[in-house]
Image 1 (tube, helix red, strand yellow):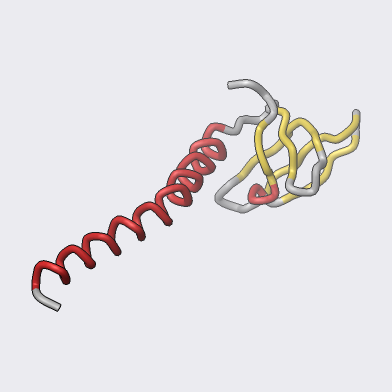
Image 2: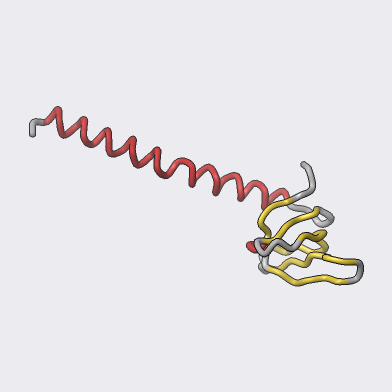
Length: 88
């Protein structure tokens, strides 16, 4: 292999790697923005499919509470929040 072929191979591998990981980076960035925008009172869905209203959120302490029925609150970790349902 001469130098030109090696350069083309390296460029191809870099592009392939970027195409493979770019969607993951975008999804991670989008999730971080969603989590940062969460506020008490937002309706959310957990990864288990439970839907409720966010009544407490402390990301630093890794704690949150959602109200799933009047007077019924469930303690969860913020990572268990799948997505907000309240339109932004």
